[in-house]
Amino acid sequence: MNTQKLGIPSTVRSSDDHLIPADPSIPPSLIERLAASHAAVLKKWDTNFALDLRRPKALPT
Image (cartoon, rainbow, N blue to C red; front, side, top):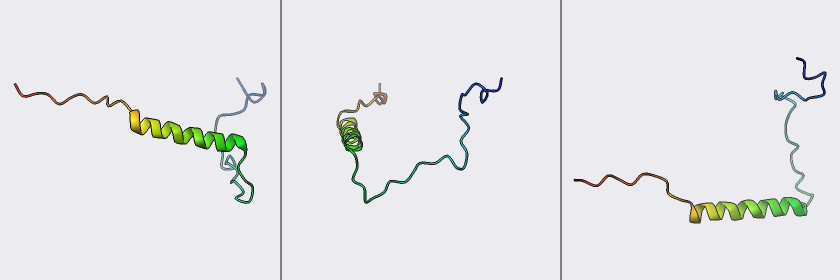
């Protein structure tokens, strides 16, 4: 089935499929600042409160 005829975009990435670089002269929007702040908080919580799921060392018997 040809998905292009159905209007479904292809998931294959091409060389022209890239992100637009941010212009440093334009200040970040509120959404971008909130996203960055949220990411920083999540990273901090992950490093401070992450569960150590490694198995404990076996005790000698």
